[in-house]
Length: 495
Image (cartoon, rainbow, N blue to C red; front, side, top):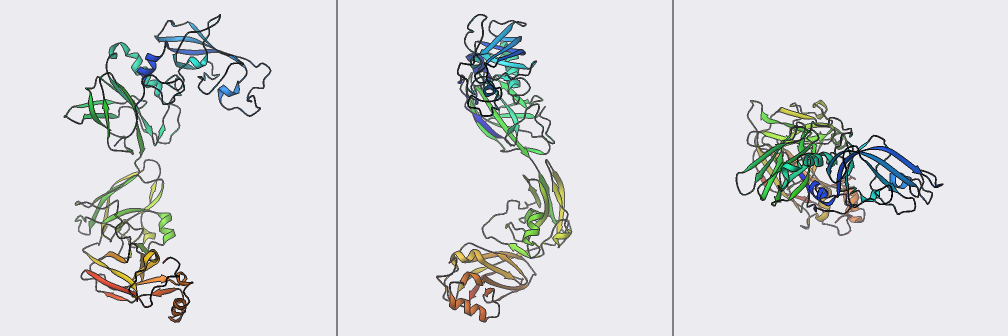
């Protein structure tokens, strides 16, 4: 269930490419690869006001705060992966105020003591030798440790075992939460434990499977994978799910691939729909309706029956349903008598959990982050369904056209909205008799004087009514004809 953003990253990228190369690409493209600690930070303001750009605007970015000033950063090398520096050596970066600056320049900040993983290109200049911050491969992996969205952990995992893995291909990546990379300082309520999550890679053309587990940061890696096509999936932690079940990728010999797997909250209600004796009921729409929707739509009185619109949560052969991906809020759980039709309410003995008929008495499911309700058993009197369908037209045989989106089909004292051509259809629980009719708001005929006069003469000034058809509730009725007693009007609002 992995939503994977995969980048075909170049092994060598530009210094300002925030997509960056892979760890190997950054390593091979640099002359010095070190971990160093910022020990000194000095600024010669050259008479310029700090915190302002040369144009006098407020400068938020570090490289803009000191624009026009001479800035020097002194760091002490702690570890060398590549190059001439030894632990304890000093490395100086200097930006002259009269030199060009840009967002491509690496920002050391002014946090004395901060550690940085640096990929440095080129040679220093001057006496004493000093590098320009632009020589640091900035967005392409160089970063201050502990604040770089865990990307540096991927690099260090690779760099620390470099002698063992040189010449091997590598798949690596990290978990992100709902599109946001999670770093060590990110404050996310109920953030999952990213450590020890199983990652499974399976060949598309054989039964070969490779598995690994994530570092505590959510970073994972695999080496020496036989070239070919693969699927990748994860065992997401409780309360979360990967946005997509599987993703396909192809890896070649020596190639390094970097990817993200996106986790989203798995707010869910799962359970079974059964009849009173406990037998499963299949092919019934079970839905979680927000309390706000129920209150606004008066769901105990109205039903939205849209033919052809499938229900996303239909019970299976065992009566099981799973409603996932719910956003935060309060919900009511309802089983729709209309087979395969999602609706906020249903006039035909709609049961609300836990088996009540009035939505005001239903249990409220409060969803926060990672709210999961499992094994919900919903009992209902829903039994055999019969089909009610037919056509609606004006007295001259013309269908309502676009006006059909405004036609209300009324079954006894309940009503709902139906669309799609001149046809309508819905299901009724067997044994539910009633009368069926259709109506259109009178305001739709404000440009049709004769129609308006006819409607007013009927006594109901607000609606135009069709004939009524008696529904026995005992058998399918599929050739019903509902007819409005006047011809269509070209001047009607939405005709």
